Length: 398
Image (cartoon, rainbow, N blue to C red; front, side):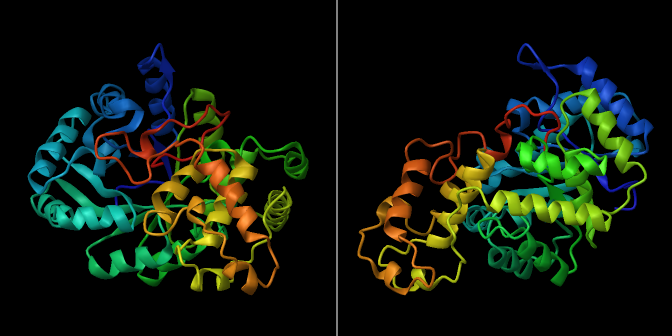
């Protein structure tokens, strides 16, 4: 970790593209700008940009700069192995694709309760630790998408984990479907440095509704500036990633992160006002007391599904589909499983029409599948799916 120069990283999931291929000329300019401004942390994974991210880094970074000029992070993704004996060959392919002899960081990718169980069956953590002992990478970590209690389980079982990458931004900070704050607090409890992905929530905290823009404009800073600096200002944040896709985005971000300053009181107040605007947008007024879940015969995690629908109504992005299909309904019932028994409504302190609201959830998330109900072993992982174009993208790492 001693090689890291600053707390802002280049997430290589939303790269500049031309005619279906990475625009290497533009990416070289972005890499040069990044390094010239004193930054050196690059983040990739085997599936990013349709498996084009690793070779692009070889062409634009590792073949053009000495090995001590950059810090390179890669990941072990569940979609590219099914057995223990497939992990080492995959790792060697990743080294070759990136054009390096070792990685600085290697993360167990997109860990959730379900994916962690598979990694344990395949001895993925043990194999990775063997590779680290052999000098194939320097630091061991995970990227994570699930509830805080699952993160605590993983960190308890594998104290060798050195860093944790989590989704962390001001919109998700207290969102019960993502639990950014709770996951951050687990990292602090275990003394693990945090790498932030999605500080701008896939561009959603850049492309704000007009009412929210009006709150930020008097501050004289961009929405991207505010979102990234919010995430970077917490104690224990080692790195904040941004998935930049053109040189203008790169120049904008390095300008305000070069001499990083935490948010001022006025900026924090603006963030709170923007969050209040989000909360006011036709949202289900669930307080997540969870009285409704105790007696549900279908084991539906009702507050989490309501939180997903709330987030979808505010941000209209694919990320909430991922949490619905791959986190909250993997081991619990779907909204469509509701048998309308009414036990939930009988105990709801907010007197919500839960049965009708679950029908709304099912109509939104089960009419079409942006992601499979559980991660497919052969399809690209959620983290490799490109987000909709935005003026200044969110974080890499998914």
